[in-house]
Image 1 (cartoon, rainbow, N blue to C red):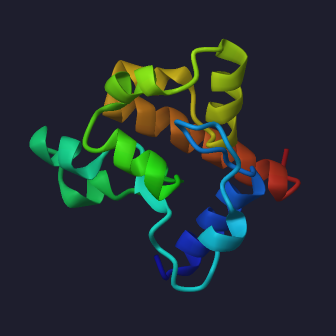
Image 2: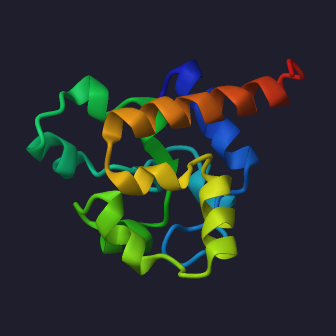
Length: 136
C-alpha cells in the first residue's frame, strides 16, 4: 500500500467516513491513516475464500476488493464470503444501506458473485472519484 494510486484510493475511502461492517460504528480514521498502519485495510471478499475458489493474486488484491474495517470486524468475518457474514451485520435495512454506502458497496456483494461485485464497486469508486474531482 505504498503507491500514489493506493494512497489516493485510501483517501477516497476515508472521505466517505466508513463505518464498521459488523458493528456499524465509526472507524477511527486517525488510527487507520496513521503512517505505517496497514492493519485496518481488508479484503471485502476474504483472500483465503478467493484463493480457495481459484482466484489469482492480482484478482484478489485489486483495489476494488479493499476497504477499511476494524480488526474486530475482520476477525468476525474471517474467511467467510459476504453472503455468510451478512448475518452478522445489522438487520435494519436503513442501517445496512448506510454502512454499505460508506464503503461504496451495494447489496449485490451478498450474492457472492465476485466478478459482478468488482465491476459494480469499481463503477461506484469511479463515480465517487469523479464527484470529488468535480468532473460530474
